[in-house]
Image (cartoon, rainbow over all chains, first blue to last red; front, top):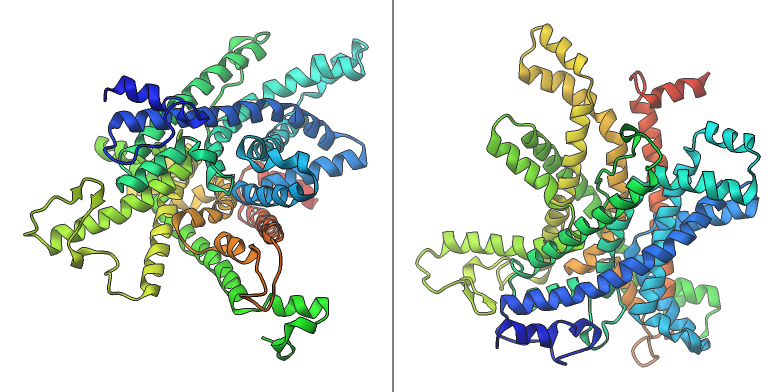
Length: 268
Length: 294
């Protein structure tokens, strides 16, 4: 069987297209590359959707935490505290069993017990909390003079937010937010290890990598392949966020640009 | 545990719960909290040691050592960390067994990797297949500690490397001008001064380490996640005197609260430590403190 056949059979295996059974013996390098790469579809799915939807909630949370309204402040503060203070792994478990018991009373919630919706929801809340805290910090760091200038121009309310607060907040937060995005993508590998079932063995990249490691008892091939895929994904992300960073800094002289520096922060 | 627990069927709600939570199986859950704490206690100093070694290597003047140090620091970037956990736990095990195999059975001539199997001679097995269950458990736990220490050591190395570079150059130069040797400068000036620069990063890392402890479950250790799943599942009256439905959501709520409290307390302790250590240093932290003290 040539490698192209394998790609045709397993290239989209993680979303249920192609061969039904996973390979059981005679694992070739091509098998491992194809199947682990196919699993990356899920990582990208979770990462992209959680990041974009989480961005909106994060902005609201940051504004809420900085607001003068007591309830908005407390609510966003607690939301951020709960999701940043506890391990994502436990959040997944808790959410899964919560959805499982809610399903019995509210049948329309049953999609939440499967990974595509339930895990996405948890990741959405989690990234919203982490980025909310980043945005809140940036909001506090906005120079007073910017706001005074806005006042002097007679801006207020929403137009002040849209033209001054929000762009400046994003510009200041962007380097930290880039790291958050990278680690969100890394965190998506936890999904199928935390009770969310990989229905018909449709799992993510790490799911397949550990499948191969279990079957061959040789971790030295699947995990480096996985690592390669993720380094590649990380580089793409840094590139994309770098482009956005340039756009955010476009009005400033070159030496005032905020630099994206890759910093570490692993598990959440 | 309590005497009134002898017949759980006709107890009031509260005493039923107090009996339920003290069954021998639940004791395992509480012991596994001890496992988590033990992991933290063992991993933190080991990772600090690894990190210190890594940072020193990354500063070395010899190219090859510097490369190794930098490689170690950057290896865990860009790749999901649980991939490392899953990788190292098998890889280290195989490394140990392979080394013992080479030493203990030198005249074994079959290949070690036979297709999908990893075969070493029986006296090289770790732990020996004849050893009792608790040795297997301890070996598994120590393997997990070692894995955590390697991964977190790399992060610590990164922080300490940055902290060593943050120590003001003038301090080092003054020490040299007093005629101290390189060794003395390192011991008397650099290392004592770097801690305050490393503290925010290390504090952050400690929080991350706490939040990483549930991953023990993935390494095959019977930790709190394991017992919460085990005890929370539906129990029928046939097998236990404390039948209940699916309570896993409550168990995990308990774990969630446990971790929230744990990180919160750690945060307060780290803040206090920062205040103590930044006394008398020329950093923003101590400046702020002075202002508050006024």
